[in-house]
Length: 243
Length: 234
Image (cartoon, rainbow over the protein chains, first blue to last red):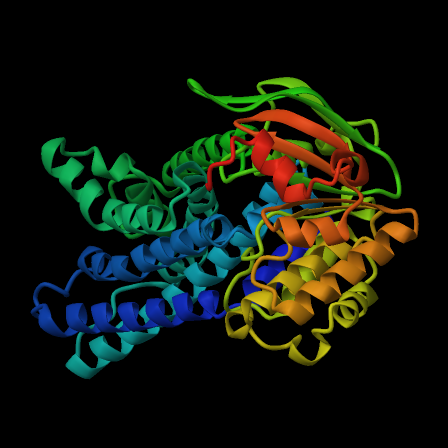
């Protein structure tokens, strides 16, 4: 199993994909936080809960990009055919999937942490420049960093499951983006209160960005989605033929 | 060492492989011949645990591939010559497999030497010619120093020097008592390289045996092949 993990880590390091994802996430978070912090009026940013909402951007970006990294970990093997040599070496397949889940979780944790660090720094600078009182306390920051990192880690593992189920890389990547930015908010529009129970909403609760659900409930809910998706992906990977 | 028994693969109404039975003896060099879509690759995929047979069984060293411990120490295989991440180097591609298989890291340099790619080892595979990719695929198959090689269309994309190199390589490999199974379209090349052939068409095994016996009565391999497969160009 150690060999499988080292193999997966090498696969992550030996292409530019992960680095490119990191850079895209940085650019997106920096842009979005700056726009929010600069464009909203001082009144709108005067309470702690409103400020926490601005901070959602970083949590969402961390979860999304971690999910994308998870999707890519499995779908790039399917897309480029390296799944064949991979499974010839490990024909029982389960160790490959376990290693992918573990390494993607680690990558997702890093993505989440860095997204929150970037966001909090960026927002603090923007608030300071505009003379807005930063209402967040140490506990808020701790929850943002730890909760955001864990939420992103869970999204990364879920991404591996989604990639294994959908298999087509472009479809899985687009699907994940649409889910984060479109599907959950649309569902919330139709059935108020539903969005917070979705994987994105649960992740925000975990990071402390939404007061609608407790962090523990968010964590449990998100863990449940992740377990279901990765179990589904695992199952189809074990029994499906490789073209 | 390798055997198929009434091996069958169905996709809905289509029967891609239909009751194929054969076995290989150690030290032989065997080619699977057949038109496109004849079922050659599907047969190899079932032998290698990538596809599940609908009926019958495919065994290597007496067991299903998926049940073997560390299969690449005994079987080296390449199904597609393009199975590389374009921006990963040859060295990293091989190293990722060596780590997963828990082989010695030295094997990476050794197999690159064998296929004469040491100088290009750190370049991303996207910069490789088709011939270089074929050789990198072969290097992948050689990592575990196997007794049995299974290669799908290994001569595709090789220039004449590359084809001769591959032929010499495979013959030397078999002369050491090891076994080779290749699929191919290139009849003239096959006639010069292998000692046994299997001819498959529409999923059925039409002929098998020693090359010199099949072509015994002054017929060329091409004559025998076209006669059996209906003679139409595919």
